[in-house]
Length: 395
Ligand SMILES: [Zn+2]
Image 1 (cartoon, rainbow, N blue to C red):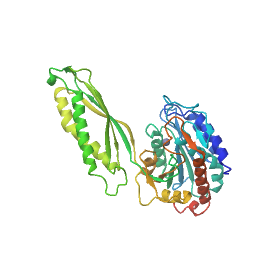
Image 2: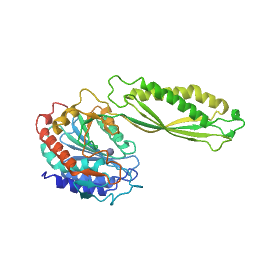
Image 3: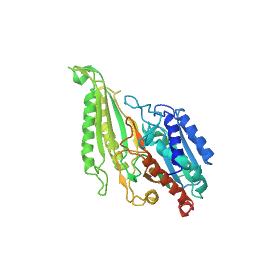
Image 4: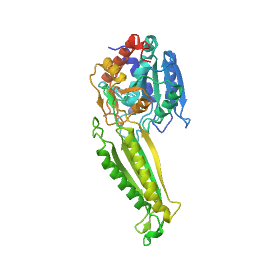
């Protein structure tokens, strides 16, 4: 039996009881974790979000220098509305070797494991720091991690290694595509359907825009990097919704296109955005403004979450393989905060307890066995911190 497992379960029960749905505050959970980490001897900082009702936590064991090891998890969970749960989603239930509750696998189990281990890790850390980051708003666009990355960059405090504990069944994930979401708004001029030249039809412009987007979508297939391990290997585009207009015989003054890209590299996203901007500036807007000078096309960025690009050299992959015994690393389809930390200059892998299969669903659960495996990983990390890994040769 792992002596830390019972403690981890108790912590997980407490964490699940904070209903940190992304729309709501996570402050109570952050205060709770801050106190635990402070008690364990960490220097803890809480950074409020611009909205004032949410916050990131960043804590450090060891010296305040770059090149450390960061354990990162998001504190928010997806809603439970319209889901048919067998029991209260915010009261943890244990049966048949599973811990049920909203956020159990995505991803409060990992956070609970790091909190349970903190009092041990604090004694093991040497001159390579160990950090904890608990972020807000991951589920709605990774805004918390982006905010935290800005702060760390400003301080020049770049962790050498980042482990994101999203549920991977403790497999090592070294890559996923980015997720860039947009709404493009078209504003034309209303008129009677019988006199098309006297109005500016926003629906028509939106359709032309989508047409251009689909041409770009096709050309992206030919741009797949030769060594791309993603499936499919190229950057994809999806037009998810197209809305506009009021009736058969009215020139539509408003239309909206909701679309996304899943880039395999940032330059593909830049290529699509600049091609669209060029098309709007040189084709659509001149046409629209010839009739109605106030006509507009606006690109609203819903979220631009960087992908995690697999790299040949990855210290995070090397360390986590040593800790878990896993050989090799995989790619996944779901997005995480990993790309944000990679873009900052850290080596990153995603590796955490539980399965993404159970995430976001009713009766979400985390297998106790998975939690034990995560604790073993963290125990081994602690042991390593006391050896050459913890010596400041990597910084
Ligand atoms: Zn998650």
